Image (cartoon, rainbow, N blue to C red; front, side, top):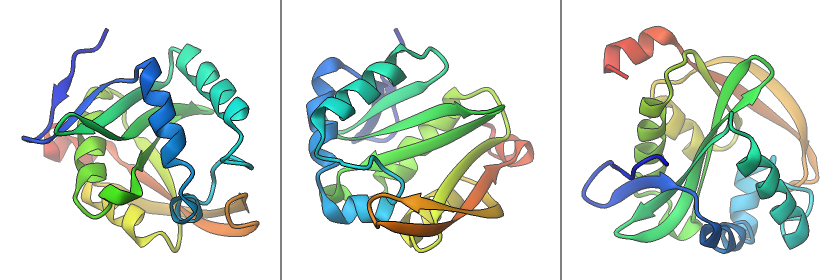
Length: 173
């Protein structure tokens, strides 16, 4: 089991526990968060689909999932997962906690756990907050893509970003 990682006086990462899933599900019920994330599940209110998704990803040893806590309260999650030959990262923070640096701190810590570089991420082009988190963590835009976003009911343009090996070397990650 991975030990808890201390990030700052208040933000910490720890392994995901069974009792975290209800909180994660509650976070996904926020319409604004779903719109911002864009590429979520077709029906965020479908608890059976949510549980099946989490059962699959928790059973996959290639996926790194961490719960994000602030002062002991569960506020979100951060993950690294394979997409083809690449490793991509994602995160979800409770909208009530947005704008406080929690996503940046959590992603920074997760990147320290990952030995491989480069690492990739994707964000809707209009998701300025997520793009700011990724840039603060050293990611740079390397391309563009688009796809159907269930939360928006439309095709959405996105940026593909990379954390290159040299960026990690400069930070000591």
